Image 1 (cartoon, rainbow, N blue to C red):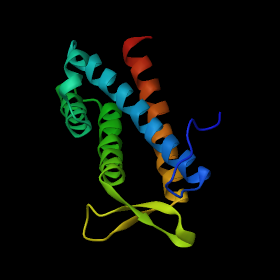
Image 2: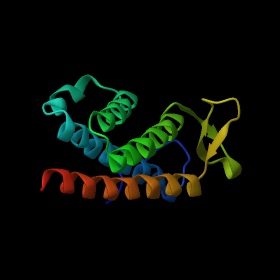
Image 3: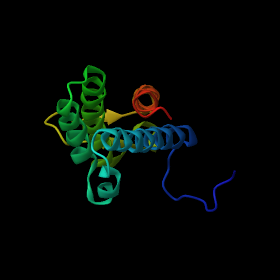
Image 4: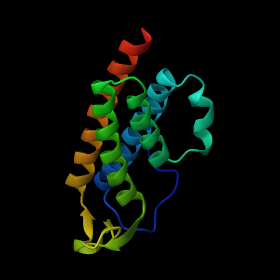
Length: 144
């Protein structure tokens, strides 16, 4: 599908595709994680509108301690790490990269991190793998 307008910001279509896939996959896994917390704390899903991703990650970690559950704890650990990376991506600065193309540069830590196309695809794959594992765990826990 063609873009509905011509962007005046110089950026490669492949870079936009990688960034979009990365953010979509993260949003997808975040939703599954919220339902995982709900499987331990019924009604939790109704509280997620006011919760940040960091809070949902912490809630999953806490819920894995309600009934000792190593699989849930593993997902919680992976989601916390992924959320930190997502934060670095979201709270970053657009910069001009090689060949005058826009790119994202994270400055959340002392060392700036470039989000080149390969980094975005790597993040997208990590989020997808966690989403699949989380969905399987949710199905196992809820029978759905």
